[in-house]
Image (cartoon, rainbow, N blue to C red; front, side, top):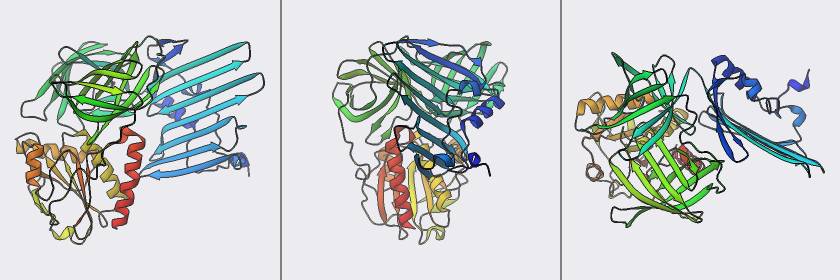
Length: 534
């Protein structure tokens, strides 16, 4: 037996397999690099992905000969598996390898290498996350030279990369998307997230692409092979909200930046939003991760998060934006030595001041304490998308733990929660755990509301009922519709019932994958809670 072929951990594809899959797809590379302190952008190019990843391609420690050299962590959360190899000694050149798989396919891959002698040292960090990748190297020879290099890029297959700009009326919001070669769909990119618009219709020269999840769509016409104009239409309200936009092909950035700033904002910061008269309205936590000039993160509030924000630091200013399929958010701020002072814009209708105290800790209220129950009697009866009335007292839910999600089909945080609940139901099966979603629509059209529910269920493959609880909803109206609660302060609100249908816990809001470790803690806590109910 050839021992070199024996693996420490089975069923883990190596980086070569990832490179080969990108080559097979004909993926192009859209790259930028840091040269000294200057940021240099490149046009999309065809690459050999084995050569692109050559610096770490053969650096695999998943081999039995490394059995005594590495500690191994192998964990699974739903369909996502994470395997980490950590060196037991600084003498190992490869200090760590982290592989994240979704249904066996690599979605993240990270390698950290370091080598040091009396005369020289070198380090290499390679990261791949959902199509984006980074290679950072640092080489030193004492008294001779110190060379640092940073290259980042994105693999784009079956389409072309575009930079869109939404007109907010007095400000512009940039976003990036991948448009299919046949124009049959597009995916908006926010950090590691992709939001699909793949429901295609066309009329003459116009292309209409509706969201996979929400009642929103892009409408556009091509001005040339590399330019298009159109509008984004949000139909979540009786009066649709419309933003015009333009887009250019093969632009490798969301916000441009010419140099790497000296300031690094990675960390957590206490942030506040102001009312129109300048009074502090809400206190939040701004979580940022900065690499060079690129910044990603989210605002974490008492009732949820602002999902995936992406941007840059340019000179003395911070720029962040997201286009999540339902909302268009733009954050700008001036950076001082200890603070951020800026403006938040949501679409063309909302402007709000905000500020942050850098690296100041702030603890948010426990989301399990924000909403309480007014009675022990929990019951309701609402129709599903087909008009069938479903009640908590139905025999299907007798003597069963039930998770109730108070949500809206227009709500991205509700979508994040629904994906989590669908995953948990698949894990525990419908014979063990029941889920019911109560939909509070913003529109008054019941026919369209039922269509929204069907799209919502189809988008995540939900087989649990989503009931139409109210039309033309407000939080006040939602609270009146569910009198067993003290009120509704956020969508979503999750109500956990035991097998007697007594309330075990109420979780207000939802902090999703954009919050990183915060979401991981939530996931562990509620997975354990659901398990205990069974």
